[in-house]
Length: 202
Image 1: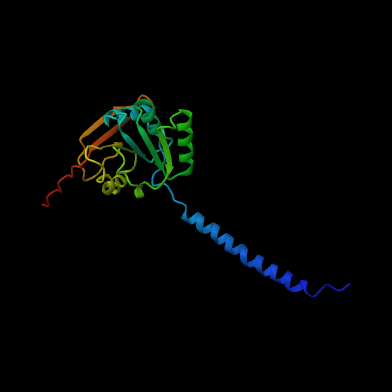
Image 2: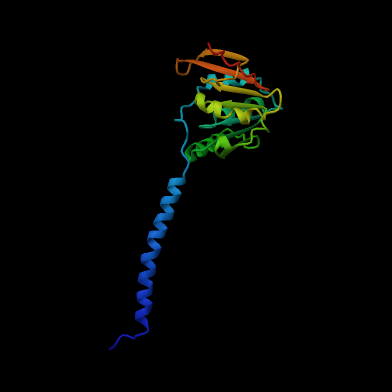
């Protein structure tokens, strides 16, 4: 029996289409992978007793709105909501950290006060916050200055271990953690930020 002639162009067209589509799909997948954001710092959790001291130093109250930038497992957000009853939001760029934080929020039953979002903190509007907590590298703290300067007067910024070059802290506290037996430094700034005078050139 002879094969119907009409099927030959159809089969050929399907073959060509498959050849064209597969590389395009592969290229799209590669492009998406290339665009996936990477965290600027390696995740290292802040000891719980250091978190406690950070919130104490910031004088957190029920009326505050706390933003934790690079929230890790969400422990600062959870403690702020659970202990002080304030609204708290955590932001992290890593999907696994976001999942872990959301699980921690749910586990501690503070969903009504605490939220976690996957977001680049350098593109974030910080103006709704009255307290901002950080555990980033010094150069990243400096990158945040333009955003931090938009905070309302009297807002507090607390950083674990790393300062903010060019901005004078209101307080610097040293604490030896019972959790890891290491010494930690906590910096507190209040807005408007107090810029340090540039050193005079000799």
